[in-house]
Figure 1 (tube, rainbow, N blue to C red):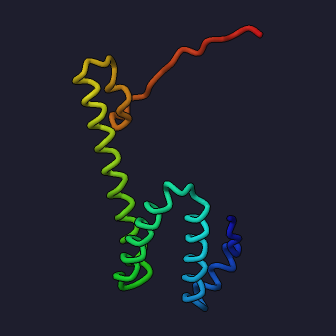
Figure 2: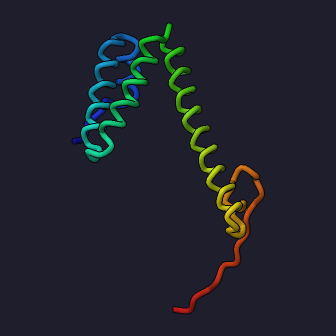
Figure 3: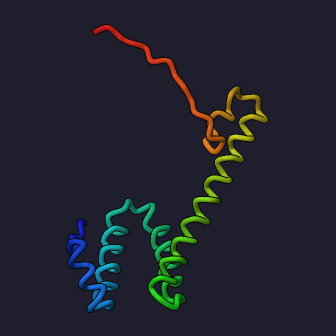
Length: 119
């Protein structure tokens, strides 16, 4: 199910003149997206959306809500990075060679030799 959003300029006008309508558009678009996801993901997506809605409800202003949601995303990203690093460390403990090369946080550039194939 596809949800057609107004263009950016129209959304800006709605935000300035009718914030409740903008919130309804957000809710409809979110519901449409969740409905279009495979069934096995919908429960998790609804849980995440519940958390987002609660943070927005607790916020004192739209900017505060934006910061709260941004903090949620950053925390989740940090958890993912930590989990990936744990996996890399456990691979190294198991003796897999060069498993540290997969850790992109080191910032060292990787190089590769490009092979030409004749057609």
